[in-house]
Image (cartoon, rainbow, N blue to C red; front, side):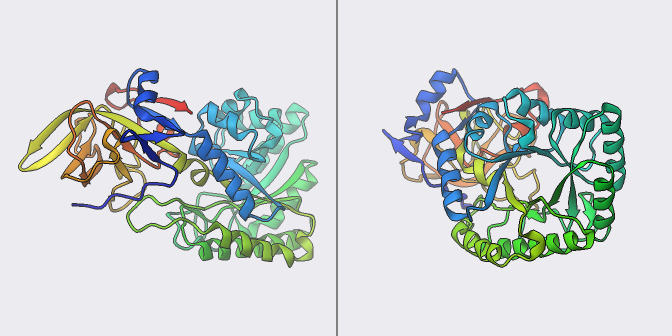
Length: 408
């Protein structure tokens, strides 16, 4: 029997049925009409931001990385909770504008921005995080044609990465950002162009659970920002310190100690060099803010046995939860936290695999986990589904289509 990942705090049972935000999931499914279904808890989202603000230095702004979950009701909620939004495409720019978010609160990163995306961001007044000298020249030329003063920052490829992170975003050769040694020259070019200089975006890695590693990376980021500002001989109005805070997905994972991160960052802020004395700082977080606030629900359609193994076949699958299937960035597949939502407080009775409805052996939501004995009609739940679920999975594979999404 293979272990399942840890169920996040804040979930309980009502009449033995999983409850989220004080509601039984069966009632939510009945209201929605069917499964598969993503459910996001506004209570969880508010609490996560509140806890984070309490732990971080007051000087630090909090931005939401829209790519983690661009569901408009989630964006509407975050508009009243966070200080800014980070996007990675022209499509996301349209989504945040459609949600009524002020584009001046938006920064746009990504190594392959098309001219139409640069133009849209410049017209809207969003900050462009420039990823190369060539992109800078294109942005400056487009702004001149439009007769608009662009808001330009530089994404820096640091000489270090975030130790223990799931994805390395800095250190060595990367398609992201500009190598640090080339940054000062581009800073001067941006300022000389007449653009509004907005500072640096320095992102070293993501999905880290080690507070000391995060704090060490933040210290290195501050030192790098100060050095580059000094070498550029220009003030640094803003510095995005990146994110990297992870959440526990797998057996043995422990939550990030944000109190330690906040304490050490506060200590760094107390001894900032002169170059950073007036700089505004932010962190951008996506997964950490929304991941544990979401669940994915699917209904068991069939119960099958094959060569002594039990398979619970659902109406969902990897086309909605690619990450939980182990096909989104993991080398060795391990089980996400999952359960039988309609038998949530029942004892483990058997080993079973929860699989989806697709005709591929990759469509596994839980492999040989321990569950109560379940039957067709029962509802399964995959936790930690609030980030990189609905929008990061191949919903149209085999013509299945998207799952519904609800904010409760």
